[in-house]
Image: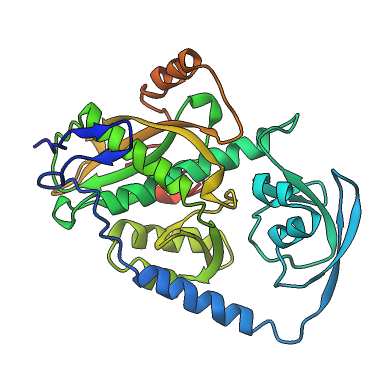
Length: 330
């Protein structure tokens, strides 16, 4: 059964009508996981206790400098605000002690050196992987808010980012088989990604215990199945990320804001028939994007779009999760 979308009104990023049947761009996101995220985030901050100072040695433009920050409270984003507006707006992530990638909004634990990485660095390898992973996460947020409940959508996971594959990925389950989205439907999803970027929402990280993670994903049996394996490889903890009200599992790191996402196309949907079960039909959603600071000619971007439509060869959701957890939960 296909799911049809009414026409897009115009390039002004407006929908002409409410969509039919299953596919809807009216948000249905449950706020329970986000509320639990906020409660746990607040509890962890309150448990910090007496505030201790740490020294952060910033290395980079406009000049090296030392900052005195608060242990377990201050973040690289806070450090960047001291350095200048350009740096907290354009930095994708931090690099601690020249070796450890660190989320911009993740509290710092100890004194360290700090570098801020962006998408125009001479060696953008780490930032590019973070961008690709973040695109998968944001696609999950868009999908979660774009399907009506009767579609039976469950997000499964997104594999480890591989820039050479040509596409970012999010694997999902629907209650109906043979979904063949139209070009306007894919365009509508692309538009929703751009809208998310324009909101410049923070992307937040939190480590929670497996019990709380299970509660967060009480309505998603696929996530609940993954939690024990994830926790067993992370000292009993599950790392979750939030953007808006959307919460998902990922080992990270992610970029610090949706505003870093630029041009974006949700380009293809591939059925994964070998993973199908009774009442569960798996699909691999794929797309391509560029950071907001990068511009390329439309002809070159069209080549990237075409390449992104080929089935991404990353691990499929039907592979044994115990063996593939490190690849599937990127």
